[in-house]
Amino acid sequence: MRVFRSLRLTLLAFLVCLVPASSYAGVFISVGFAPPVLPVYVQPPCPEPGWMWTPGYWAYGDDGYYWVPGTWVPSPYVGALWTPGYWGWGSGLYVWHPGYWGPHVGYYGGVNYGFGYMGIGFAGGMWRGGVFAYNTAVMHVGVGAGWGNRVYVDRTIVEHNTIINNNHVAFSGGPGGINHPPNAQENAYMHEAHQGPSSFQTQHESSARTNVNAYASHNGGHPANVAMARPMGAGAHANIGSQSSGSGAGKITSGSEAHTYSPSHSNTGSYTQPHNNVAPVEHNAPQFHTQPQVHETPTPQHSGGQPGGGQPHSGQPQGGGGHEHEHGH
Image (cartoon, rainbow, N blue to C red):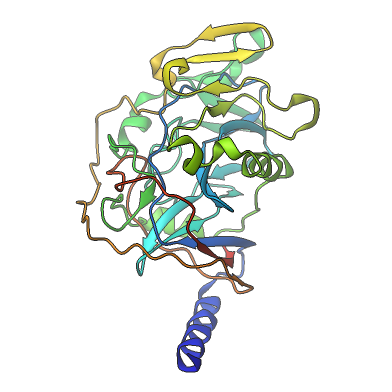
């Protein structure tokens, strides 16, 4: 045991040396079984100009994987773009790499979350001076004069940056995962100066974590609330525009008014172009279950596979364990 512990500490020390100086301290979690598949849902319209879409994802908590709904959040500063977190497979474990804000969208495992995060880079919009403009080929914004100079349509960038993920796999690398290692540009963007999630985002995730119905062990991998217009825990704006999956998908409720939106605003990825990078499934993949442990040591980004589509593993996770480590991006 002492030899194993010594080797583990040596490895962690080596990984710390690999973390770029520009990175921020975050937390990554390693789990012995894959996250459930990504739910299919419709994006609620952007509630205010300048807000940024953060796609929903499976996080890991006290009772296993739980769903954090996709939501719009205020941009923390002019020019900020969100790189979503992703689960990456390595050494028999699924490791969570937290998302971050930066001047460019970096590597997120090739996971196709939809709504501009098609697996490679970002096709959902761009900053034009101090104004963020939305690509309505994949983004759903409001209507009216206030959006006139804030919208455009560019389907070409969507087609060129889409990784096909018809099975909605939620992790990168490993058996059944997405096979998309970072390209040169993604690798460069990973090493830029980054900022961690905003208070809106951390409150939103915390609210999901305390909701027993968000856990896959309770909802069978089919969460009731998959997306909302405003983040939870954000004062008077909390829980506005929540959306349900399943038979209610496509209906967004804000107050007493309900709307049905076009399938083009779904995260199914209606573009059938470029990359089909889902790795073949190996059903004898290791399934390790360990108790959570906290390590205050950063580790680097893992290169991984592909986006939101792939083969779900048999059975839904029923709790289990994971490791929490300090992580730098």
